[in-house]
Image 1: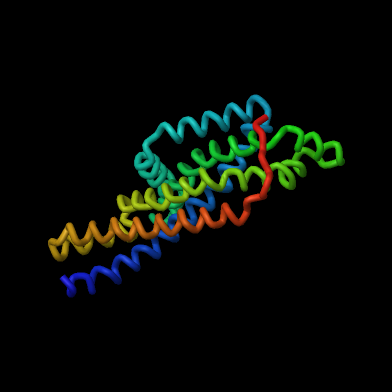
Image 2: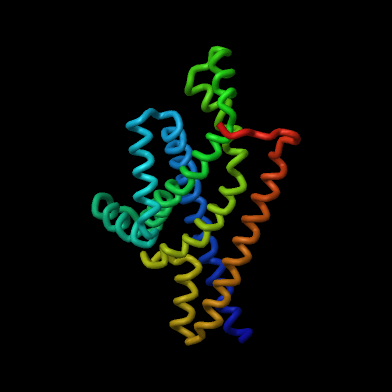
Length: 220
């Protein structure tokens, strides 16, 4: 048992590094896409808003594993892209749809008077969104966004099917060599639990640090 753990632990830690990399890339790109889609949904006009809503609906209605596989074969069919990056981009596209819904609600929670006040001070619509609306909306979105961060962390295991050597793939390698599946996958599950717990606690602390005492935002 001890000997097996001494072999398994370094492999899982190596996989954890890749898991974190996939998560950060997917979550970061998903954040940028989600914010952009949310702004278009709220302020983009009828046609752009409709297209953004359709994108979100189609992506969220498609199983994420299917999205990963489709986009992997599409992306690698167009450009020579490693499985790591193809999988990360596929997860980012999936996450952007969910994040767009989070940020759309957060933007709509900022009182409409904020936009009117910014425009009356001479700001353009884009300046008002960037300097006034989004800072408040992102702060409001931290609680649901922390759930999305934990989901993306766990969903990063889906790049396993592309051969990316993250935690689950490392556990599978160990299980195949030693015929100890319970130890391999049980240890992987425990590692995912620890990582998810740390992410949630860290974001909870960040949310409290960014909280504005006495500020209550009303819905539009």
